[in-house]
Length: 493
Ligand code: GDP
Image 1 (tube, rainbow, N blue to C red):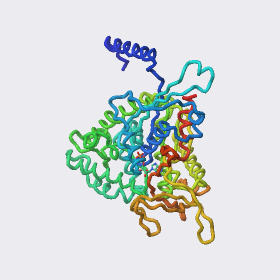
Image 2: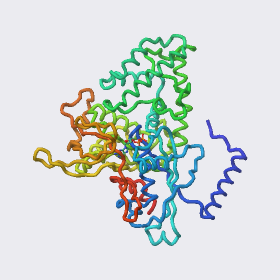
Image 3: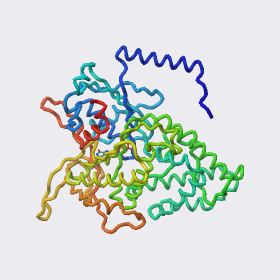
Image 4: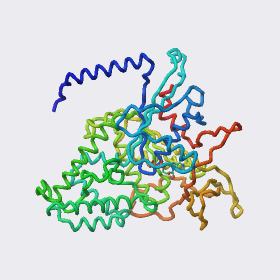
């Protein structure tokens, strides 16, 4: 199919847009913009990261490694109206109020949202300074990483999708969680008459299995379809009410059969949900940060780490540049920098930060190799967007141990003591392994013996320090500045 000729109205519209842009430029309203995608599987820390990033820029936070800020070149940073009216706005004010005033963690990402942060800065070069002050709009796009996992579905038939879903469900790490769904699916004849109620039950069963994979003890990364756990505004829509079936007929299913109905919905999901998301949102991104909760996976064991690697591979494949694959027409290869960030590093002592970074680097390297990825520059950092702890030492049985100090969330238990959310305490978090290889064993089926465990306690957000004048300082962090320098530094040069 060829490209249709643009109609006259479109040409007129385009001319007007071009003129508007020129006018905006002339009036000084126009500024270059960079679109920064923020993603990661649910609970990875997207909301906290965006809130901390904006808060630190707007309030002139301490960001020594973010050169534009530390050298004093940023004159001011402020929020502006976002360019995309159809996308919900990221609820920055609400999230910051939660973090700073109530000291509770904000509500997590459930769907896509956007926020425009504009930075006025002085160019680092004398040449740049001759052309007045620079201005950059950063359009931050927050979206669930689960939605990226849908991309491979575009190249898969319903039959392949069903077969692969079943294979994964039978893996040792998932066998138990998927038991009820597999039993239900095994009893369904794909050739029988389509039955809406049965379709609903099968969908519920499959979704419950995916949700169970995410609980704390398993900490498995999720599987597609991404909207099953993160439906956004599609909750309850028939395009979502499908699930894999077993013993499928090869070739065309009988019209009116269960298989025909499921297949049609699967195809509708790809056409009406997956493709538009990639075309309208992912294709327009310039920079991307992928947040990963590696610590939770490490704590849950080798199977969870392998599973995280699998999810990371699929996520990176979405940003794969180059031609000759089915995604070429969907994703323009614009993204030139990707940062993979292990979040929540404030849960471990700084002596372990480099180890965490090394583990994630190994994970990412293998994921990059497996995703057959090259093109964009990828970097890795271990960070805490909001630092909820500080460090200290404690003496234990004649030994001096590094500890972290913070206020555990109400209800957290340590050594039999349950906390009330007001009491500060010191925790020995344990060590990460020096050698990441142990964590990345290929065969996830056999849980390793004596796996390292870090003591993972959830803390309340920190109390902000105040200056002598009573002004509260911006949110503390670990290496957020390093992340910003990689993602945005060159844009503010
Ligand atoms: P999202 O689902 O990716 O939006 O995840 P959130 O940003 O809501 O983070 C999920 C949870 O992880 C939060 O409620 C916090 O408990 C925790 N968390 C996220 N980032 C940090 C961090 O930098 N430090 C600490 N200590 N906890 C964090």
